[in-house]
Image 1 (cartoon, rainbow, N blue to C red):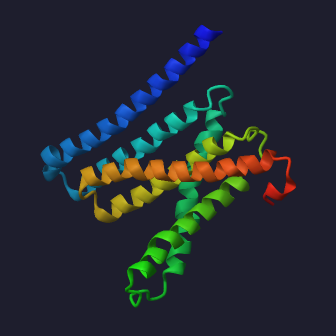
Image 2: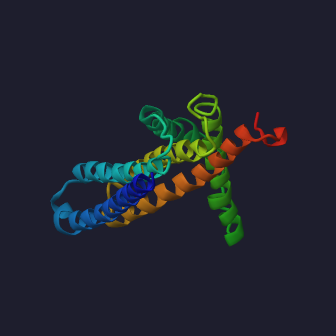
Image 3: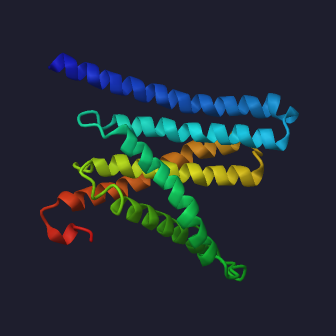
Amino acid sequence: MGIRNSRTKLGLWLSTFISMAGLLLIVFIAYIIENTISPSFNKTLLTVISVIIALIPPLLWLTIFYRQDRLNPEPKSFVFKTMLLGALIQKAIYTPIIAFVFSGNTSGITSIGGRLIINIILIAIIQESIKLISVRYSIYPSKEFDEVIDGIIYGSALGLGFAAMTNIGGIITSGGAMLTNVTALVVIETFAHASITGLSCYILGVSKYSKFNILRLP
């Protein structure tokens, strides 16, 4: 049993290391493309390449997070569908809400504190609220959400899908410009979305299996 556990842990660390190396490799490939090949590409082709590269980090991060639940792994189809749900809510719900919230003229707000509140805190609250509610009323009632750690798995999957759609939108808007910087940002931003949403949904998992009704969400 001890040898088996050691091999399992070794496999987990090895797969995590390979995935992390893959993330660094993606940034390096983006650097090569930007500095040696991209000048000969038209804007459309460069955008397509950028979108493809931007989709790889979320999948690698998903592999890393998914492997953490090695004792009772979730169905891959459920995890992948949750990731797709994250992409869907980013486009169909979050984007229209942000457009509505910022439809007014905010140019009069010139203070650093004011812009910090609007551009970071308010956006973060809206993002995480939408993602948390999405998990709560989608996968949360399912029989597959049967452990506290499942909140991390499904929350990170949804956050990665959300981040992927956000990054794709930014890449299309910029036309694939500054590929290396964009790719590095994608790697970091996808991890941030997965971590924050995974943490909030972990709390959601705690609320589901807590003995104290006051912690349970409606």
